[in-house]
Length: 240
Image: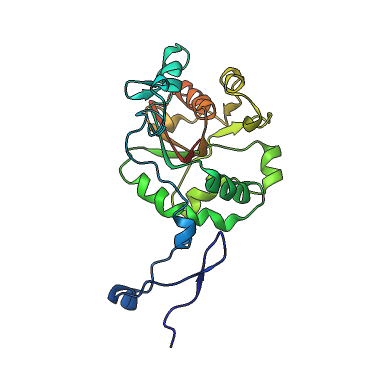
């Protein structure tokens, strides 16, 4: 007799064998979005890392480190225009080949269910962070039409959290097609939807999918800071 409903991996669709314990017999099996094999391919960011952007230091050559921050963050903080704009970024996973394929299916091929892979770690990461409001990075109208949903807002909703959509984005060339220098020198693509006075003096936690150069998050943070926000942090699924 089977006491448990069959569960399948959201990525490879293999059946997930339930772990039978006394707790699972009384409370039901723990929901697992991935099978053991697929779950093992997600590399959580742990150990020594950049204190500003969560870039793992493991395997990073010494010339790309400046004390406890990476060279990229050191360069951002050298600029008077960007110094202190984004206080800290926290990323959950390394952007390895497996996660790239998961994100491609999620973002570009409309596999909405894959968001459930990230929800447990996202909720866990939120707990120790002190903030007043979650603000998702928006898509442009054109990009939203292409994809059908905002992948960042979907993550927040699936986690059962509230957020404020106070930013709007101008349509531009995809950041993935630009070099690092082009990203850093590109004009700000964000504006405030309106004068949000209740955010003045608050701490905002920006939510996005991938931190690559940090340009997108810093541009959004700059607009929020100009609107009177006191501090801006960010939380992303992956660190590229």
